[in-house]
Image (cartoon, rainbow, N blue to C red; front, side, top):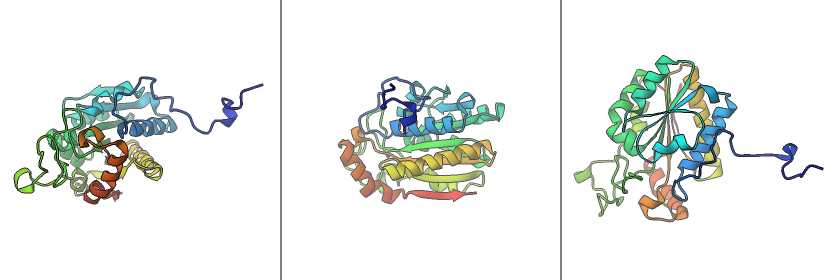
Length: 252
C-alpha cells in the first residue's frame, strides 16, 4: 500500500525541480530565496527550462546560479543589461532575464539599465530593492531612504549631503522602450502571488517581443538594517513601501 503522505495523487505542492539542493547562503529572512522559488516555478510552468538564460552580476544576487538549474552568465558589476542585450539578440528564442540588487542596477549599472530599457530590449530585468548594499557591509545605496541609517551615513541619509532616493522604476515608466514596469513585494502570501503573476507577465512579454520589462521587488535586509526578520518586514511596510508604492506602474 502506498504511503498517503508521499502518494503523487495527494501532492499539492513540492519544491520546484529547477531548484538545486544546495543550501542557501542568504541570511535568515532574506527575500532572495522566495524570489528564486518563484522564478523556478514560472520557468517550469512555461516549459522554458532548456531555453532560459539568467544574467547575474555582483552583490548578493551573484550566487543565484548556485540555486537555479538553468544556464547563467555572470556579468561585471552593473553590466547585466548589456550582457542580456547581447544574449537575447544572439538567441531571440531564449528567455533572458537579469537578476540584480539596487546597488548594482541603480548605482554603477544605472547607465546600462536606462539605455537597455530605452532601447526596448526584449528582456526582463528583476530588481531586488532592499535600500542598502547588503553584501559589502550595509553602505548607503541610491535607494536608501531619507533618514535611514547605514554604515556610510550612520546618522541617517540627508538630502543636502547625500541626495535623494533614486527610483529606477519611476524613470523606466517614462522610457518608450518599456512595455511593463511593476513594483511588488514578497512579505506576505498575497504579495508573493502578485509577484509571481508579475514575473510571469514580464517573462511572457520578453518571449512575445513586446519590449523591456522591469520587475522591482521591495525586499528586506535584516542584517544590513540590524533588525530581526519579523521586525524587518514591519519596518519595510511602515517606511519603505511609502517611498516605493507597490503595484503596476506601466503595462502595454
